[in-house]
Amino acid sequence: MPNGVLRIQDVQKYFGGLRAVDGLSFAVPEGQIKSVIGPNGAGKTTLFNLITGVFPPNQGRFEFAGQILNGLKTHQIARLGISRTFQNLELFPNMNSLENAMLGCHTHTAAGIFRAGFRLPGMREEEKRIREKALEELRFMGLEGKALLGAKSLPLGEQKLLEIARALAAQPRLLLLDEPAAGLNIRETETLSETILRIRDRGITVMLVEHDMSLVMGISDEVLVLNYGRMIAEGKPREIQRNPEVIAAYLGEEARNA
Image 1 (cartoon, one colour):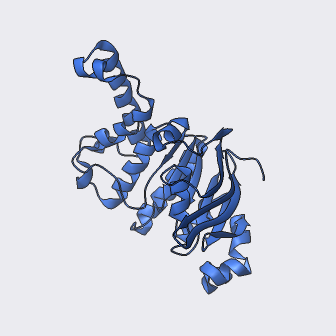
Image 2 (cartoon, rainbow, N blue to C red):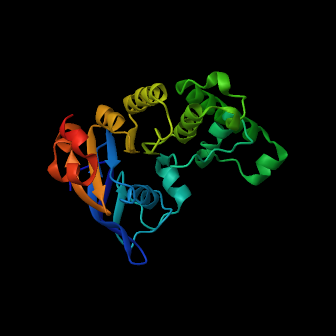
């Protein structure tokens, strides 16, 4: 298997008789954007849930930056440097944008319940640092002016950006984005595309699950194609667009003419 910041070897995940992920092995090169595509039910979100410890695999191994992930809890994996967004928005609607972004910092907090309860100096300093980090990520996402607005008052495109800001506040080395363009219009998708490229330029590795093929083919360094939980192709975007098995399984005649 080639080197990568994330290495996945012979991973399998069953749900009853359904093989959601079936013998999957690949690596994610550091500092690149690797997209995972495939039909609905191909196992893409299940793969993200396995990487982040939501589900344990039935078989196989996950290795991140030399650390075995198998058996670790989700917060332990996040602390190692993997953060994510979700297929369905998971914001806290009754909090403002700044508070939502600040939650991304929780894996790196050190103040215990005693210092927090009595508002001791260490706690106040840590809260200031968290606030500054959250504002930095809101600024990066173009949301600094929306910091005090309730998350539920933002349009969908900005809510998606806010969720990414929260994930970035966790200071990831690897960022998993699960269908970030779903529901966005063309202009919002263009903004998202530029944002993902800027995230990569910060040195953050990105794994992207997405159905918008224009977005995927426009920004990806590598593309992995799943079908029924198995990898059917892996390569550069242009190679994937021309792969007959991928065309038959997913992309269709539109890709043949791309």
